[in-house]
Image: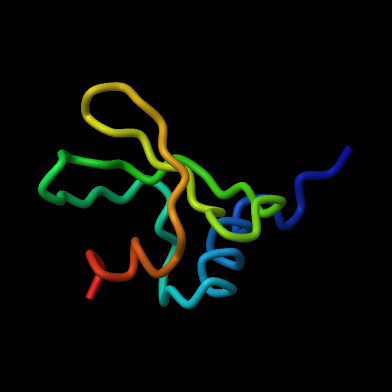
Length: 71
């Protein structure tokens, strides 16, 4: 099995959702806590971005919600 192209999947999916760089692993803070982008769930059309909060809970977010914090 070949891993060719696997390393840039996050970057390609990030660009698909309108981000300039790979956002997996990036963190942002809002009034409810600190979040870290964990992965993309491309089968979820409305909320494809999976983020983990500082309290340990995992949330599905829309690209619009995340773009507010990466301006």
